Amino acid sequence: MRWRSRYPQMAERNQAMEERKTEQQAERQAEQQTEWQAERQTEQQAERQAERQTEQQAEQQAEQQTERPTAGRSDLAVNKKESGRRGLIHIYCGDGKGKTTCGMGLCVRAAGAGGKVLIYQFMKDNSTSERRVLSQVPGITLIDGPDRVKFSFQMTEEEKAEQRTSYRERLKQLFRKAEEERYDLLFLDEAIYTVRAGLLPEQDLISCLDHKPEGLEVILTGQGPSEEMILRADYVTEMKKVKHPYDRGISARRGIER
Image (cartoon, rainbow, N blue to C red):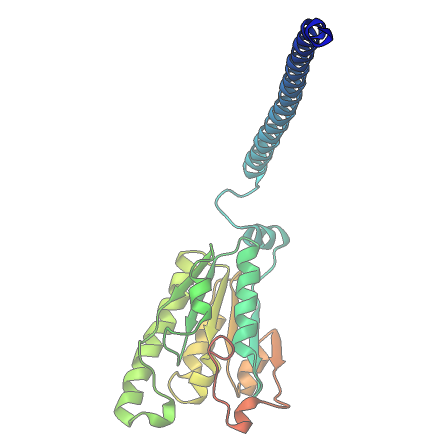
């Protein structure tokens, strides 16, 4: 009989526990909903702030572009014009590694300053690794050379005569293009070596340098520049070999020497 008398009380207690459990679940859901709303509000504020920062950056860039003193010209060219600075002549020579590497680095620096850069490589085909990257850099123009190139000592006299005629014409075209299209920097890779090999008359190169546009910077590389070339240059840097893997029979490696 006691068990029977307790049963209604247990049922009431269980019902109360269920109701309390339901209330607690509702409270947790309400708390979770509040937390989610707070998080979402924080995210929306962060998104709006990021959008505003992007808009401000775009406005600042537009203002800077509008304030640029000479529209359509590079920072390098503007600086030259304002300072009255003339373009100088660089020679990287010597028997050590790094002549072309140094010249290419200077081309990247000039392009980074907004300059227009024109590059031609004498005595090389179009397969050197740096061309893949440089061709994608804004402001840099690479002029293709022959697809196949021999060393000068491998050429017949007829081939040398053909190459000499081709390079003389190419040299004139390069300086003409640099002037007409207002380039800031002209890099003539291996021009010194080409002169020394008898495949480009030195007087042609000297004449082009003497009559180049005043603001045009020119880089020349190659071993054995003449005294006359050195006198005309403003920078002459000699790469001196102390050690080189080639002396141990290690040929040029792709991505390092070529």
